[in-house]
Length: 370
Ligand SMILES: Cc1cc2nc3c(=O)[nH]c(=O)nc-3n(C[C@H](O)[C@H](O)[C@H](O)COP(=O)(O)OP(=O)(O)OC[C@H]3O[C@@H](n4cnc5c(N)ncnc54)[C@H](O)[C@@H]3O)c2cc1C
Figure (cartoon, protein in one colour):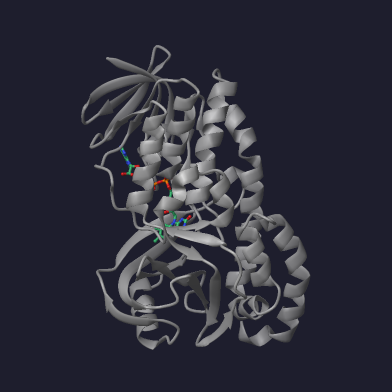
């Protein structure tokens, strides 16, 4: 049976980040992916500006749109954000994920495409994986296999908190260096319009059971902020999230979970590419530092991320419960603070602590219309 130091299941951003990091450190790594790359992944493809310092230097060759501006909408009203330097980037997930997998290969990792993990078990101190291309064994396993992670299921984890989402690609016109966030359309969540090259990506996500397709179609028909000429087939998927340490599924012993498999997604806006990528690096570090029990070290390393998710969760609870208030605050300092956050100049903790006094003031001003 073929033997590796580490097997990473899933070649999304989380898996490729762990595979690249560990290969660079000299471990023998197999990155296993059930699809052929480049593969489609439903996603807005927005990366916050603070991500750039972790990415390979030439990642900008993959950027379709640089974001300088934004709009926050609420049932026909809108706030326009001051134009500024780049705060975010839009990428195409098929292309970007392929690029990250290639970067892992450049560091020596073996990529095995069209290879699906079917089953796994532990035997004589090794982890054995049964795949559509035969069996392999390893000392460490990283589950980066997304929302329906088989590795997480093997460890007994279940998804508890997640957004349902529907997204559609459209042809039309908008300011291709801006993003639109709309509140007031779903109970707990939001709608977005992002550029994707010269096309539009329109999506909506909610944690509640709502008819998201209807919300999306109705919005496209009635809104006046962008011009939609043609829409392609809508698609739907899930976005897991964690609102604190205990909701992050880090794994067990020598089996670690990263990205969506471990719920490494921010509960306010559903940003998962950045956090998944970071979790891949932290999992890699934990394996190197504590090969006897990497999960114990990994759990400590993700504490800072968990704290961010706790505060993002607190903001989400208030903002989605009182969406009109959140919108009104967006016209003041909140959106400006959020832009600083995207660039990495502030944290969710600071935003929450600075913002909540304003929130109470606004709640008194707009109490009955939430
Ligand atoms: C509609 C929508 C919009 C979103 N927009 C954004 C956004 O704008 N910005 C942002 O940061 N995040 C966004 N997200 C979240 C983001 O897409 C995810 O958090 C991110 O893809 C997580 O990356 P990952 O590597 O953990 O998992 P994935 O990208 O899902 O990759 C998992 C990989 O594992 C493979 N796999 C699965 N099972 C197996 C198996 N058994 N064997 C082998 N391979 C397997 C899959 O084929 C896949 O390639 C969005 C999500 C959705 C649904």
